[in-house]
Each structure stands twice: as structure tokens, then as C-alpha cells.
Image 1 (spheres, helix red, strand yellow):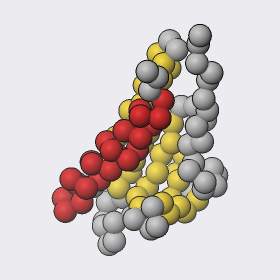
Image 2 (image 1 turned 90 degrees about the vertical axis):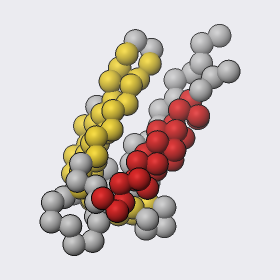
Image 3 (image 1 turned 90 degrees about the horizontal axis):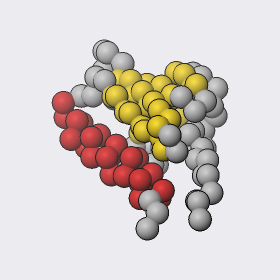
Image 4 (image 1 turned 30 degrees about the vertical axis):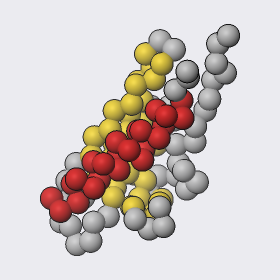
Length: 104
């Protein structure tokens, strides 16, 4: 029996219009959505205080047969936040999606 396709909302409850401010996990992550191309990519700018260069997270989706590959590129992460942000992407974002979609 083939699993039913599951469609996950990419905006996590925020408006999908570009240049929309967002806040996740009780304000732990704040920023704005710069671009959304449905089923292809989401581009967000994350705020880290008075940082000069914007920190941009780009999440791309690539169809691979019946699967989808996800690529995350996050630039200009402050040194003091790097480990925490990396762990967050791996555990709370990508890890959570993988766990949710795994079929025994």
C-alpha cells in the first residue's frame, strides 16, 4: 500500500507574502520572508541584533522521483550563534520533518 501524499505548510502559520515579518518559537527566531516560490524555495532574512550583513536562510526543495530533497543554506550566522543555529536546523527543522515523514 502506497502512503498518501502529505502536504506540509511551509510558512508555519505566517503570511506567505514576501517581506512579511515572522517570529517562531516564542521569539527565538525573528525575521522576514523575502521570497517564496511554491514547492521550490523559501528565502528568509533572520535578525541577529545589530548585524551589518543580513543573515539569509534559503530552503530549496528538489523532486527526486517519489521523494523530495531539501537543501538549506544559511549565510552570515554570527559566530556566537553558529552551533545553536546549526543544531536547530538539524534537530528541530530537518530532523522533525524527517521523523514525521518516515514510514516503518
